[in-house]
Amino acid sequence: MKIGELAARTGTPVETIRYYEREGLLPPPARTPGNYRVYGDAHAERLQLVRNCRALDMTLDEIRRLLRLCDDPRENCGEINALLDEHIGHVAARIAELKALQKTLKALRGRCQEETAASDCGILQGLAAAPHPARRETEHKHGLLGPTHA
Image (cartoon, rainbow, N blue to C red):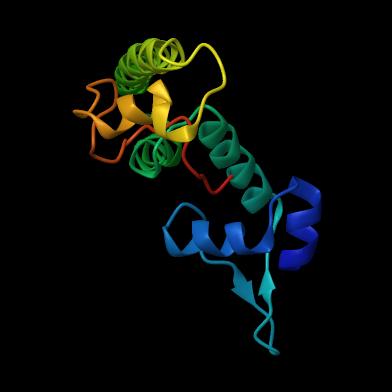
């Protein structure tokens, strides 16, 4: 099947399929004499696995680790368990960060109970004050709210 057919069959945008190929998550497809990509059922199955992992907010590196284990079925699944336990920890940490963020936002919202001139708005004054510690300034490796290729 061509890339458009794979995209339709799996509900995956063509650009995402190409991205996963570049990232090494999908094996290179065969090519026709006209240089069109030709995919098989194995590509569709692997793509579905990748999409399911992305839906669980797994990073590309975590997915690569899982795929290496898939490619060597004799491996012990202990590493899969460890990877998932690690990911559960990342999710728990992100939930804690989001709860702290929610608390900070609610406190900001509490600073402006009635409509006033923007110059007197407690929310704007609070935002202009010292930074709030609820969110790290670094990018989240497991950002549940960030863009994904899924």
